[in-house]
Structure formats: structure tokens, C-alpha cells
Image (cartoon, one colour):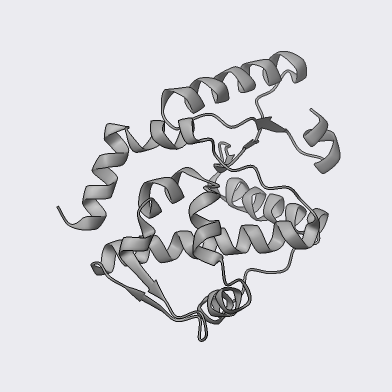
Length: 193
């Protein structure tokens, strides 16, 4: 309800839960509590370390609300736009942050990072002078790794500039995610197995 008041929309926050039934039940409970307090379901569900869900009966309204909440968050936190030239953005971040891979491996911020980048040292080589990355895997898996690298760098960079503290997943959460059959299947799909 605090988020709803602050941003002027029906929104609810859900603390981090592991993917699958844990997050589903937490979302269900949060929505039920919200309905009981406000007489309506939230339009926006912000899930810590996962992302957001925007719901509604009209696709155009949902699309517009998604863009609106994204703009509200960017404005509220004074975030910069996601860089158009993400390849240069990633390269520059790597050149400035020499301990990039150690930090990336130690600070797992979202489930897909745990799923697709758990053994990243075996999958990439980084030239710390140029920021170039060489992928030692197939095209699908390289794309999944790169997508997670870029998302992580953007989150870390914005959090640092905003003075926010990151909330990495615990080792128990990472282990849980990596032992989920559905996540093992997603890994196989990217590896082409």
C-alpha cells in the first residue's frame, strides 16, 4: 500500500522467494492481502530480485502501465536510460572494474544469473584492457550469458550511482534454483543438449 500511495497506482511488493511454488504462493498471498485492504487486486506486482508483473483486462492498458511504472522507477531513482550501445557500455564497465567477474560470480542478483552464469569462468574469457569478451560456448548459451552480464552491469551501475545496497541471493537460494528440474531443462536448451 505504501508503494501504491507513493506511485499513485495499485501496486504491491513481494519479498524475494525462490522461483516456482515459493514465489507463486508469495504473490498469491500478497494479492489476497492487497485485495482485502484495498477492495481491488493490484495492477502491478514488484517482486524483489525477479522483476515486475503488470496485469489487467486490457492489453493496451497493461502495456502503457508497464511503461509508466518503468518511467516512474527511473525518475524516482534518477536512473539513466538503458544504453543503446550496450556492447560499449559493457566493455567500458569491464575496463573500469577489473574484478568484474569475481564480483559477478559472488553477487548473484537474480535467478537467471544463477541458472545461466554459474560456471561463467569456463564459458568466457575477458580482455581487461579492451573489455572484449570471448565466449567459449554455442551461440544460444553465449546470448543467455551476455544478456545476464548486461542486466547485472546495469543494475550494479545504477545501484552504485543511486547509493542503493544490492541484495544478492543467498547460497541456499542459488543451490535451490540450480537443483530445480525446470532450470536444469532451461540450461539444457541453451546448451543444445
